[in-house]
Length: 240
Image (cartoon, rainbow, N blue to C red):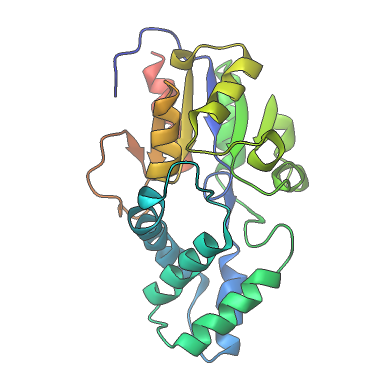
């Protein structure tokens, strides 16, 4: 991390796997229909590993400008989760993938509140910091946050499909800085993917914190936190 002297005035956050969780229970229930018995906790832990694999094998190798919202990325992500649960039968993987493609559109799986989000966002506000969301999404993220009671915590929400640019492109972070009236050194970004969130934020001059539940990311050249509350407390410590 570079040397920053300006005071932190804002925290920008990812949505999926940061403020929102995947509905692990509904995935476990669907797998049970195909004879695979797993608990929601097992699905969650497999997802923690899958996001690292997705980053290493897919996202970090994507050509510049490639979208993270492509159906092939979502399919690879689901495959990595299933393989992490020991599901390797191609027919089962395809049936679950087909179910995913039509489940709960346009929101999909990311419709569950991260339990730490209200407390973490309250800490941000109590510290006098601004808060905003920068998300690669399909136009639904604002409605999801509103339905879960989180929208009032934010000064604004940037949805990539609405602004026409997505992470890791530094332009979406620049848009957020412009809307907030801040310099890059005055903002921190918190997200769950190294290649998309950390590299994108740093390319725009922001500090970034990588969420690492389960400790699966290994050694990375950025600050890491095991959960959202820990990430926010780390940011607040930087202000002291």
